[in-house]
Image 1 (cartoon, one colour):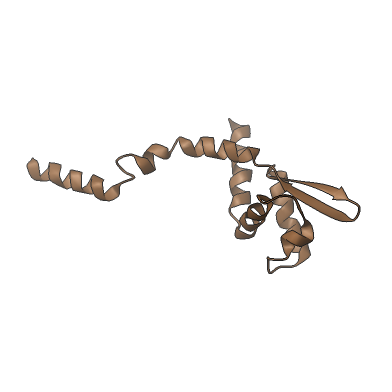
Image 2 (cartoon, rainbow, N blue to C red):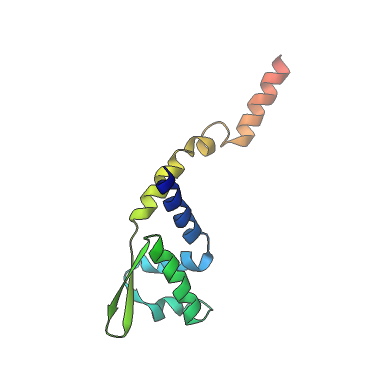
Length: 114
């Protein structure tokens, strides 16, 4: 359980930064170089490299070196663990509390009929 929590912590930490989400979105289209990933981000190459390292450490990305070029690709498998964890909470956004207006209407009606 502790190992799973650490894995989820690293994964959600990686997903918490907007630049890393931009990088992941770009990687969904296929493998690309670090330079290609850095281009749309208004930050230095060393800053982008730090974000890539976080993505690598949680298993969302892999890097291979081709000459002097580092090629990155998406590894989406860790997202299935996050989806599984979130699934446990689905009832809270789809159940009676998910429809707060409907829940409050029903509660008010019940109180009025008492």
